[in-house]
Image 1 (cartoon, rainbow, N blue to C red):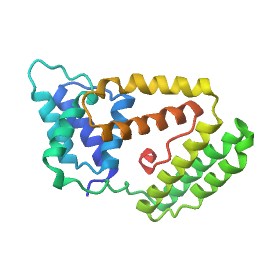
Image 2 (spheres, helix red, strand yellow):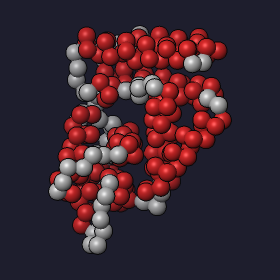
Image 3 (cartoon, rainbow, N blue to C red):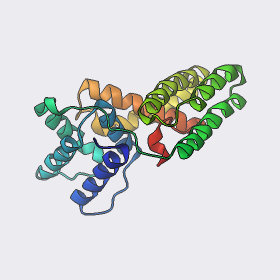
Length: 213
């Protein structure tokens, strides 16, 4: 089974090889890969989708987002190949514990910005710190659940103007793929981008073992 590192980096490298130039992936591109990962889209399906996108005549592929429709087509044709999300990367227990400790500290520090939610931030931080550093699959699932709780609190705590700004950023980011993905895929991608933008605005890292890399 492909781990996170292989899944993300193989897609990035293959995309760069198809463009025949070094191209930095955008925030939307990385969130798109994360969405494919969460949906259990096999690596070979994504790569076939990139091949198909680049094979279309008179079409300049400027970002990975332009390949979303082609990947969706291949996935629909090969439904039986959908699999589990890639396994988390392998790290030493001490390294994982240190990383979880940093995540917990970042979350706990949010009480300085929103003191009225200090207890809830502390609860999430305690949950992060308590994760078993030896079971990466379970740890990743726990982080995903805690991230959902955290973003829900941030949404409640944030003022309306800040949320509108984030929503506008998400809308601009989603524009390149609106006509290239299914409703289900768009909903998942939009939620991932929303979480990323919201947490970036608060200076909190995403709660995932992938970002330990």
